[in-house]
Amino acid sequence: MTNQKDSRKQNGLFLLSIGLLIFLIRNNAITGKYDLASTATALFFIILGLILYFSRKK
Image (tube, rainbow, N blue to C red; front, side, top):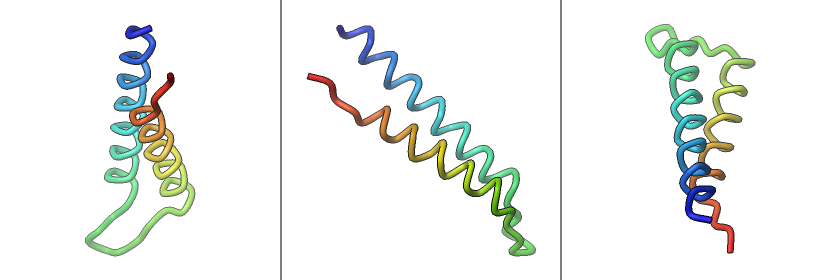
């Protein structure tokens, strides 16, 4: 049971880091140009990673 919980946390952190990397690489803060598709994908991975990381199964 604890292995599944640890696996969810690891998967959540992985998806969160992938989402943050996509967001940082594809969006340019200097020019203020944002790619909508990449931003949506990054937010999807970030939200999914947070859900997996903080989900608690009883």
